[in-house]
Amino acid sequence: MFTRNSIEERVRISYTILERLRRPNGGYVASPYSAEDGSGDAYNVFWIRDIMFATYANEYLGCFDRMIESFRLVLDIFKRYHLRIIRASIVKPDVNYQRGDFMPARVHPTTLESITDDWGHHQLDVFGLFMYKMGDLIRKGYGFRFTREDYMLISHIRNYIYNLGFEPDFGMWEEGPEEHVSSYGAVLGGLMMWHDRGYYDYKYRQKIEIGLHVPVSERMIADGRAALARLLPRESPSRPCDLAQLSLIWPYSIVDYDTKLLLLQQVEKHLVGERGVSRYPGDVYCGKGLVPHHGETAQWPLGFAWLAICYAKFAEHGFGYRADRSSFPLSWEVRQEYFSKAVHYFMRLESVMTPEGYVPEMYVGEQMGHNTPLAWAQSFHIIAAQMLLNLSHRHPQQFRLPAELRFGKPGRAVSTPTLGESHLG
Image (cartoon, rainbow, N blue to C red; front, top):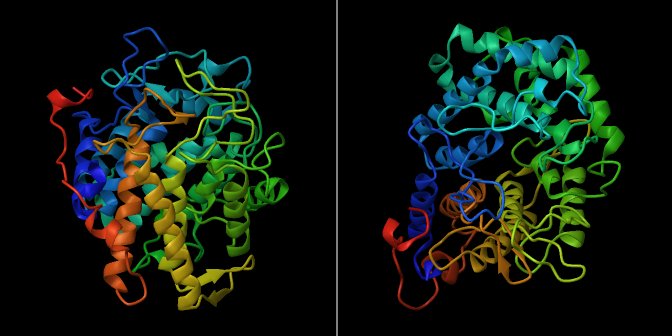
């Protein structure tokens, strides 16, 4: 069993599984599922969002070169559709009838061509995540890896956001069009990273003025804040809460402390299930081949990983921010409670992973979805594990990992299955 290994070995196994989904060009296919059995859409393709979240694990393991390689690929994908970005930044395409005029959200893993235009491609959180993480990498000192041409493309993406950024889209789950607070938060986080007037400064040891390359207007920041305030704490007019709202806590940290707690409480109260977290109340999507019983909703193990990451972030920082950006201290007692919550959700995550260490996309009852492993969920497992390890190493007296989690469950440990033993080959 996977969980009989030490946590360091489980991270290594999980990363090996994730790397099998990586392609030579730096991208990650969403899952190994090829749909050769005719049961649904192939998932062994590139979703731009999935690539960025899948490669996120590299940062937590110190593999920045591999992460930058992935973001260079995302840049190449954007460049392929540069004209669409420029046109949409000038004249808004109709989100219902001109879907082929938007930047595609998924592409072929080799040719990078759009797989279909008859789909909800207009997903603003993709642009927000790209802007946020590109700015973050540059502010961490990797700006020399990017060219003047890259900055020009980023400026056109900024213009695209200016024209479309706080209007209905298809959101993280590719459903809509509708206003989504998670999309608005991602876009605002991306803009704030480049506009930054101290908002994200606490994350960096030195100040690098990336706004000189791609300026961001105060008006867009104000529009983003107003859009968030208009919808929060709801995800959208039709959804009171949504798993995607956890992105407002991590990675963007774009809302104040009290709002973060409220969003977590909503997810825990309404969406947490036995084998994962539902995306939103009444979600009917359950993948091909899975048959829900009456009232059953798909549960995503990804949600356990995301909750663990959010609580680990709370434990990591000795302060919180109010709505006016003033800070206040968090006691060790409070931080230890958050650490315990992170451990709780991480252990729940590992309890629903496969014996080999795969993170499934979803469960419907006891049925496991065929998108197993799911690349960005595998990445989130690595990130959550590494965050807990880092906290326990940095503050060994305050943050202690349970022996069962640290050293593995009693019994014979197993190593990563070979390609011949798994369905990944």
